Structures are given as C-alpha cells and as structure tokens.
Length: 87
Image (cartoon, rainbow, N blue to C red; front, side, top):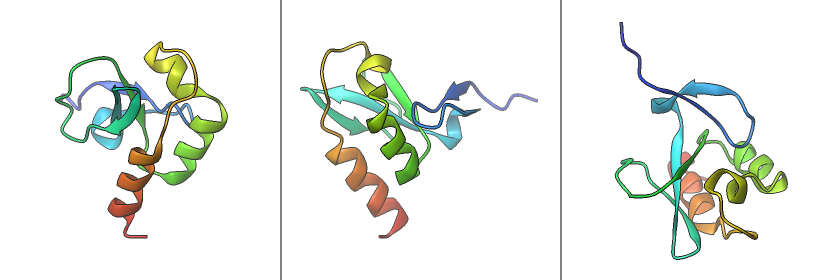
C-alpha cells in the first residue's frame, strides 16, 4: 500500500504524508501557496493551520527551508489559509 511521500511541516516539525500538507514556494521574493504542487523550485511544507504558519514565522523557518536570505512576506499564504478555513 503506497500512501505517498512523507514531508516535515516547517512550523510544528511533525512529519506527515504530503497530501496533508500545503506546499509553499517563493515567487519574486514572496511566499505563495502551491496547492497543486506544480510550481517550479524548492518548496517548503506546512500544515494548513494558522498556528503552524505563526510558529514557522517565529522560527524564521521559511528562509532556511527555501535556502534564501532574509525575512519573507507570508501574506499570500496567510490569506490562502484564512480562505480555506472560512475565517
């Protein structure tokens, strides 16, 4: 039985099947959600949970995971999560 690749959430650091996580990529210096998992480049994985996003921001996990310098704008990811959760 094949369940898919296992990835680690950059927020809570728990491992999960990639289908349970949201892939996030860097586009022109801005983090954007990649729910279809088709955008090119290195991706970071995140539970679709605002708390995991907050923890990842606090830990400065996105620049490390994506191997880029400096802070990154997470507004597009936050907006995606809010729309998905209907808040």
